[in-house]
Length: 246
Ligand SMILES: Cc1cc2nc3c(=O)[nH]c(=O)nc-3n(C[C@H](O)[C@H](O)[C@H](O)COP(=O)(O)O)c2cc1C
Image 1: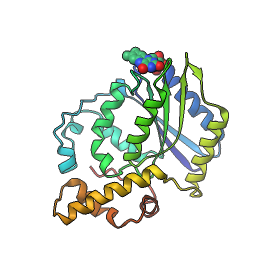
Image 2: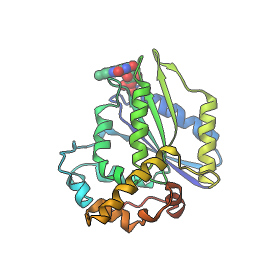
Image 3: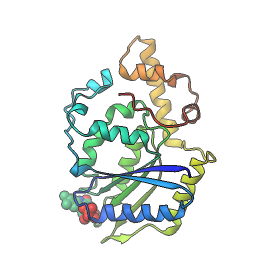
Image 4: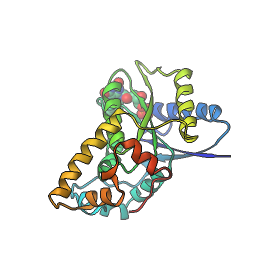
C-alpha cells in the first residue's frame, strides 16, 4: 500500500489545545478518506523541541549552513520536512500572527526560502483564534510557505469564539487533491509559486551576469533552476523526495 508521509508541526504552547485539536481531527478525517493509503503521521511539538533563535549571521545565505543546526533539533526537523509528502503547519493566532515558536523555525529556514527547497511538498495551514486575525496569519503563512516551494492546498481554522469554520466538503476537497497529486494526476504549481519562482530566477540570472556567487546561486546552478521555463517544469523534472543535502 502506498505511503503518504504527513508531518504536523504544532506551534501552540498547549499540547492539548484548540490548535492541535483541529489538526488531529483533520488528520483523522483524512485517514478515513484516504483509507486506500498508509498514512504515516509524524508530530513535531515545537515547544518540546530544543530550538535556538536565528542570530542573523547570514551564514546560511552565503555558505548554505546554519551553525546552530549542530546544537539543537533543527537538523532533525529539516530531515523530517524533506521526507514529508504533506506538512501541516498549525498555530494559534497571537496578535494576528503565528506564535513565536512557529516564527522561530521559519526564520531558521530562511535560506530554504531562496532555493525552493521544499518543492514536491504539499502544505496545509491549521489556525485557531478567538475572534480575529485568521486572514492576516493565513496570508503570511501562505506567502512564506510558497517561498519554501511548498504548494499550499488548504487552510482549516477556528475563530469567532472557536466556532468550527471548516466543513467535510473542504476536507473532502483536500483529500481528493492529495490523492490526485500522489497519483500524478494533478499538478501542484500555482500562480503564487510561478510568480515567486520567476522573480527569483530573474535576480539569480543577474547574479551570474555580475559574477556574484554564493551558496544560493550555486544551489540554483547545481539544480539547473535557471534553465526552467516555469516552476511546474522544475516540479516535473525533480519529481520525488526532496534531498536533505546539508
Ligand atoms: C498572547 C496571545 C495573543 C493572542 N492573540 C489573538 C489574536 O490576535 N486574535 C485572536 O482571535 N485570538 C488571539 N489569541 C487567542 C488564541 O489565538 C486562541 O485562544 C487559540 O485558540 C489558542 O489555541 P491553543 O489552545 O492551541 O493555545 C491570543 C492568545 C494569546 C495567549
